[in-house]
Amino acid sequence: MTQSMSANKELKDFLAPQLFAVSKCPCGTCRAVGLDPIALPGWEDRSGYIGGITIETRKHGPISVLLHANHGFLVEMEVIWYNFPKPFPESWDELSRTLDVPD
Image (cartoon, rainbow, N blue to C red; front, side):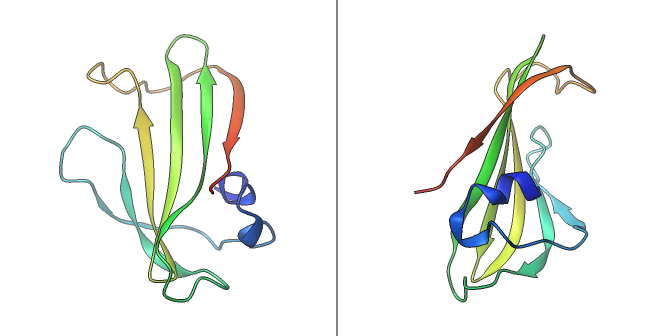
């Protein structure tokens, strides 16, 4: 999570406390979770994409982890599995990571 946020210049020095999932996406297939909201310094009343990371795996292709804010709070971690509808892998061998820098 810290690595995902470090791509955002505004949040590169922010150290988030422990995260707690408080909900999950009702679709039943994705891995997106709602987080116990954490205030983001300098983001008062701002919403949107904060940052993310894409993990390239040996056998399962890419997996992306994206972070989203709502009204100045970190509220969601979205995990994108690009080989859907195949089942999400229980484990994987990581080959590389790429930070996604928000605009």
